[in-house]
Length: 200
Image (cartoon, rainbow, N blue to C red; front, side):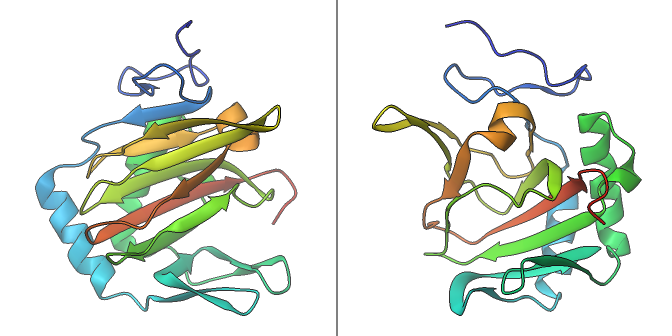
């Protein structure tokens, strides 16, 4: 199988995800941050006003908080949210450098706490968003991908290590769905998103 194409003009620090069969447009960087940075981030995140995820009357088993902008699933609209806190800005800068974008382009941050047993079902991020970049903290988990193929699905899995980052563009963002099965150990993720033009 041919190797994956580059994600834009990739910096030396970011390479397509290191396995065949993974979606085109998926890039992965291990060790984005040092263990001490991870510990400080987890401590700061634990103090945030995390609340159970709400979706059309359903309460998820993960806790979340949005910054910059928040998506209201009941009304299907984006709303302004509290500014991205200062402790997340250095992390946003590193993610932006990986993606070859200005940090200010990543105008939304979503922090998620996955307690043991929590996960997230199959989905694609809302169409208002463009680039999706995630950072894993605390523990690893399978990040599963699938796309329709004939009467079934083509599937692939990436296991982001703690302190790693992944970036979704192209088919990985637009065609493939992704999900996380119930996790075995406490995990946090920080997702940064850019917007398509004229969305906010």
